[in-house]
Length: 374
Image (cartoon, rainbow, N blue to C red; front, top):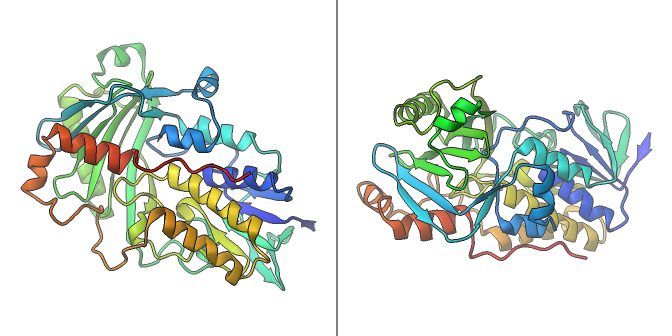
């Protein structure tokens, strides 16, 4: 039986960021993930300069060997009406491919890894967690996304009463003919909000790769909304008429509507396992990275791994992301005043789509990067 200080279930951005931070504290870490890396990860895939700063990744270095699409404009609209295009006069975000980005972050860690290894059993023995009867540690961290087995162990796993965002998307490399005909531009992601404001769709080009998808908080209508959107985009020439493959689905929780506990005796949840995606946009990479950095600080300062010591992590999350508004109705967190027909009018406004939708809801430019504690 192998003994570790911390076992992290999930090798995505949250898990790898936490592992790297804890390695600097000289802790012995094991990362377990059910998939081998690089792996296909369903995600629109963009990161802000704040994320790269928190991860200490120079864009020029990463872009040498990986897709890194500079974004300086956004095209935003409400379905069924013309879009508004805004120029931010500089790079405000970057497009990435998650299969590359996640593998890059994981490769930066030197800790032990058990990849392509599903978690089959989680047992509590005294003050230790025993995983699959083989690996043991006093602290267990769930970083395995919405369906993380550690989150399920805490009682808020798949099938709970939480309101889940469901999304479907496809990402593929366009042929030269498709690329020449595709009207979507790499520096200008397109965001199209559903008319009931319960979700949005996107068209996102990264060089010759194209990502198309739609996410909503009512799964039973997801396929219908997606099909209508794809048909409209094809008819207008925004995307190729001959899309390859099938759309893949994934699920996650919006921060204000998640009810998962963040900590218990000897256990923490980070990233999508904790339900931390931004409520206004559904974007989860930055919350995943920052939750891992906050968790590392708490772990490093904790007297022990009791819930009493670890509850400071929950306080740090609330301070960074706000108090969860569990009494609010489900749906994307838009203000009460942003309702039809006012929403339709505002989505035609350059000021509103730029200052509120893009810079506030999606880019969070008003929030300074969270740096790793040294």
